[in-house]
Amino acid sequence: MKILVVMGSPRKGNTYRAAERIRELMESYGPVEFEYLWLGEANLSPCRGCFVCIAKGEEKCPNRDDAPAIEQKMREADDVIFASPVYGMNVSGLFKLFVDRFCYIFHRPRFFEKKALLLTTTGALGIKEVLSYLALVAQIWGFEVAGRAGLITPPGPILEYRKEENERKLARAAESFYRAVRNGRRKRPGLKDVVIFHGQRGSFGELEQAAPVDYRYWKERGWFDTGARYYVDVPVNPVYSAIGRIVERQARRQIWKDCAS
Ligand SMILES: Cc1cc2nc3c(=O)[nH]c(=O)nc-3n(C[C@H](O)[C@H](O)[C@H](O)COP(=O)(O)O)c2cc1C
Image 1 (cartoon, rainbow, N blue to C red):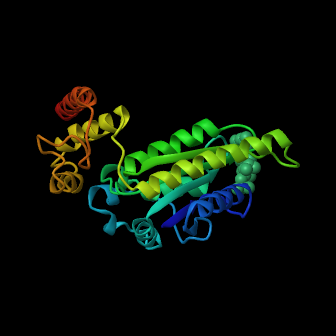
Image 2: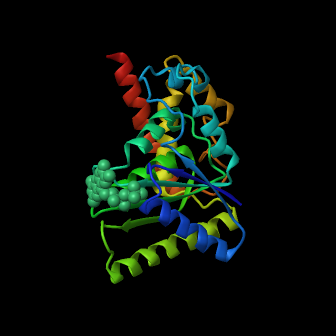
């Protein structure tokens, strides 16, 4: 299995060491192949804020750089590790630039057959913030989040108890990621996943004129069909669907209200 590590640290430091430990642990379970995508070395320019990728399609982005090749790398990988150190209480600038450049995927999600492991390291704070941000990005892009680890790696010698705690977190994340990757099957979506599906469906379904690329993408995949419960064909808890439909109605109403005013 081919794992792509999207690395948001500019150096081979704590986050890289943690990812390498995950590789070692996974290799002890079975064959895996790791490839690193070093965002610091990638030719990826900042988003210009022109909305062209969202409104007209990502192939029309005026930046001519490695973005299409990076998306292709993610498509070719079996599964992905999103790794970023905590910088200023959130993901690193490199990682945020990466997310910004692929914002069209929030509208047109695509990685449903892949699992993601989320990894962060910090001097002290920010684990919760970074892991929930990475989870949101991965989830909306279509990944199933199958492992997460946030390590405290302060400068200087790390106390023994901290080392053990970090090792436990890495072992737990590597094991659950490996199991999910091996198993391959998609888990049933949670309430949040179903609500996101319906919320987006309500919005994009009303935006044929304003967001035709999104509308077409959703329509081609049958996501507007009455029977569609989720992006992919998996069993969905009917209570979640009922809640999702309420959210969908609210989203539609909001669009009508905004368009009318
Ligand atoms: C620019 C910068 C900003 C940082 N911001 C924070 C922070 O907000 N909170 C924190 O606890 N640690 C912070 N740190 C510490 C890093 O999160 C920590 O050292 C991390 O393990 C670095 O990972 P790396 O070695 O893979 O780059 C920061 C470090 C740098 C270089």
